[in-house]
Length: 116
Picture: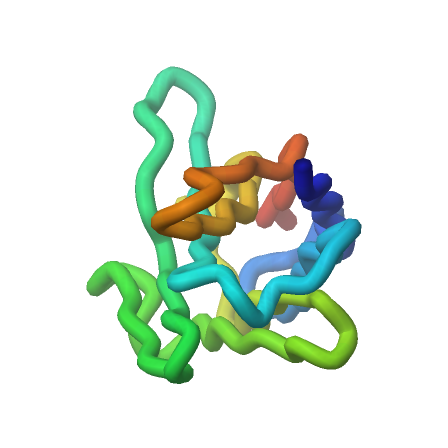
């Protein structure tokens, strides 16, 4: 069992930045992929960014050029650097780790609110 704990959320003004962290209770280097999802009020959870074990990354169009996903295997931590934040980025952000053997794990989420 691997526990994932997100941190770094909060209230920020439009145009501001936040860095989310997702720290695992165990090693993350074996995970095939790690992801950041978000869920806004009244909307379905959506995949925001993915990073594979080889370091390949992908993003939804609405965050390309503003968000950067990264992972530090030595620290067992996944990050999401979010710049030029917009009100429509307001959501609860979740990290997910996937392994073909162990399956998927989710964190509990961290709230990001972008408002003036």
